[in-house]
Structures are given as C-alpha cells and as structure tokens.
Length: 463
Image (cartoon, rainbow, N blue to C red; front, side, top):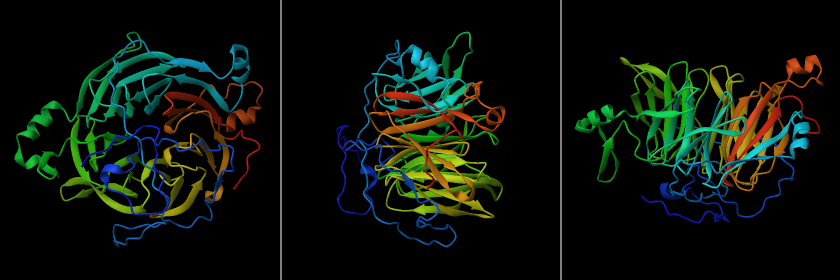
C-alpha cells in the first residue's frame, strides 16, 4: 500500500459520516492542515461527568461496538527535504520587549518565549531537566537550554517522529523505521555521539540469516521480526523495569531491554498504525491506534517467559486515536482522537472505568500531556486547552493557550523549579502551588514555551 502526498495546506472534511478508511489514507498522527481559521475565543466545555460512555470492548468477552460516527480528518504529507546540521536558524522571540518581558517573568501563567525556525515542521519534543530536545523533518535534533541553542546532532536519514531521554542516552524514532541511540558526552564538550541503534547491527544480521526470524508484512515481502519496517511513530520508557516500548505504522509494538539493547517482543497490537504508546500504572502499558482503539497491556509470566498480554480494549471507534497520556498518581489515562475529543478512564478497584470526554476543540486533537493535575491537549485548531482534574473526576477548563499559527503537533512538560520564586506570594501559596514549564511544537515551524501554575488560575468556569 502507498501513501499519497497532498499539499500541506489541504484538508479533506467529509460532510457525511462514513466508515474508517484504509491504512494508506488514515490519520497516522501526522499534522492536520487547518481548513479555515478557527475562533479560539469560543466557549470550551467538558461534559466529563455526563458524557455518554464510548463503546468499549473487553479482550475477554470479544464484544464489538462502534462509536457515533463523526468526520475523519486527513493528515498532510511529510516533508522529506534534508538539511545538514549547521548554525541554527532558530531565533528566540520574546513575548514582550526586554523591559516588559522582565516584568512579565513574574507572572504565574503565560507565554515565556518562542523558538522560530525555518527548517521545517516540529514533530517531536522531549524535556530533561533544563534541556529541551526538538525533532523535525530536517533530520536534525536540536538541543536547547534557557531558550538558547545549546547543542545538536544530525542523523543520516529519517524524519524525527519521537524522542525519549534516559540518563545520558537519547533515543530517537524515525520515519525510516529506525531507532537511533545517542550519548551525551558531558557538559564541557556539549556534544552528542551516536552509539548504536535498535536493533543492534549484530542482532539484525543474526536474525537476517535465520529463516524462522522472518515474518510476512505484506504480500511477497518478509522482514526480520525484530525491526520496524515502517515509521517509528512513538516511544515510551519504563524506567523501573528498564524497558523501552516503540510503536510503529507497521502496526506492531516492540519491547526493548535497555541493558543489552535486545528486542524481547514484537506484538501485532493493532489493525492499523500505532500512533501512541505510554507506560501507565499497575504495570499497564497503553497503545492508541489509527484503527480507533485504545488497548491496555500487561507483562505477565506465560509459560517460562514473560510476555505482554492484552488486558482490555478500552475504546473502539471509527475515529483514529492520535495520542495518549497518563496521570499515574490518579490512575487515569487520557486519549485524544481525530474527532476533537479527549476521552479518559480511571481505575476502579480491579478494572478501568470510563470517566467522560473533554470537549474543547473544533478539530482533531493531535497531542495530550499531563502535568500534575493539569491536562493539556493540542489540536489542529491551533490551540492548547488546559484542564484541571478536580475531586470527583470533574475537569475544569482553566484556559486556552493561543499563539500558534499552525496545528499543535506535540507537547512536553517539565516541572518549573523557578516558577515559585516569586517573593510576593504568601508562604502557604508557595508551598501548595506547583509550576510547570510547557513546550508546544507546531507545524508553524515554532516551539512556544509557557509557564503554568497548577492552582493560580482566576476567572475560569467550572464545567
């Protein structure tokens, strides 16, 4: 099957509901081009407490139900143009002039600054401490510190679709199906060196000469099972068990052991491209796919070996699932989809119960992130909705962040230790409030940096 390249400015909005399209034209969690300018000041609402439960199928009863039909949104193609790693074209654009910016730095919530570039769209972000990693279709991975370019490294091929940081190692997932591994060489050198790939060259060659190691992926095409043969769209790290999970457009979920870079499992997890994978709570791993499903997996002892088994299918609908995020403390999983909704489930004793849907976007939700009790959703309508989880599973829409001129493709969050240094705050407020630094990447070729306070919002409406 082949993918047709469409212009970045085009989006097909189907006027009538229809069945999900096939593998070649589906969402794949790639960017939506906006059809028209959306009104970002319109009312945002969440029917979390009253929304009807979406169809849900359990792996044990085999039930199949279909969600309400709604328009599917098609993604524009990727730009494969190469760009060598040279002096960065990124610039820091402050929100205000120097004097005004210094005054606004004391604000609890708002835009800190923007990184604007000319190389291409932003597809992936990762934050670790005071460092920010950005991936795009230029094949460069840029490293930023305090809104200034710190370092960078370049791969030979493959649009950068996912980034995971683990200690001094960085894992990058690419359009060409490869997972590349890089190592930070220290603060003095400020350099990164490629130290390998997943699978390792040795393991790949070993499997290549073993006929039993091949699996059929398409008619008249067999490949070694340990390697993704299509784009690596997402990755998630289980630090406690030392495992890395990678999801791909080849419909498989692969499990890697970080200690020796071995591929432990390759799971035929979905009927269509996997757009998101996230390590959750209670030993669960969640996957979301263009086939419209959200599945929960757990690693269990099967015979003499540990394998991942399907625990439950939480969602089954026509609209593609584009992104997942987990609030481990509250045992809640969130799923964004192409119909503009963010559905969520909560742990209730020994199972996950549907909690409702957050309704705040007019176009597809492309990314979801969790920061404490805050939930952030980025959309093709160019906005970021900020929700707060209250007691009783109620979600309040605190604010809508606007400023991007293109679809918001990725989000990442880090706790902002400097956010609570405001001396004007009361001691109790300092102690109870928590600040977050939010990075948003967009198809407008920019990354915006925001500061959000978990409790210091005023003038919002609970819904």
